[in-house]
Length: 180
Image 1 (cartoon, rainbow, N blue to C red):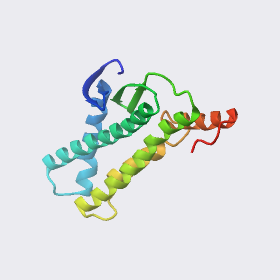
Image 2 (cartoon, rainbow, N blue to C red):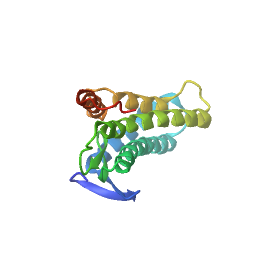
Image 3 (cartoon, one colour):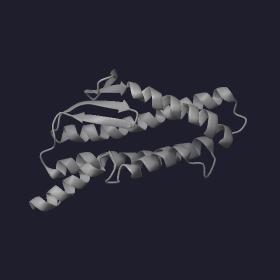
Image 4 (cartoon, one colour):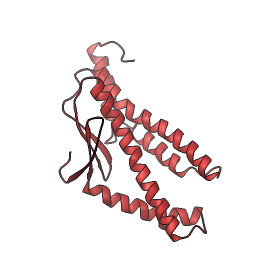
């Protein structure tokens, strides 16, 4: 785990931690939703409901980040790459692998499963939100998850996009068979 993290759980044999910076972004997201988004979109709810809903939404955002990171970690472990921990922090989450994958195909599988999981979560959360609030066209949580999914596909980001692109280029240059 990152230094400055608190271990909060163990899932499938993987330590889950929260870095102190997570609390900063959790408070900022909660405040932004409670003071800005929900009062505009849902006038008349009342302050307590705005803050409770905002805190729940911020929490669920980080649950989606944890699921995204768990997908990376579980695929890594299934392909023989040991996983030390997962840490949630200011910018999202990180899976701490004990070693690098030896084959481009394994690197690709580990990298690609996170964004695919986020796309699946976007579809599920969008359906849930549309059923729960019955407000067509109001897709804030789904839209957020979609944007996070798209952001992770960009090669220039900190996320795994650079990892899957490296895997593709390594496989192509080494004459390895296609990874799919």
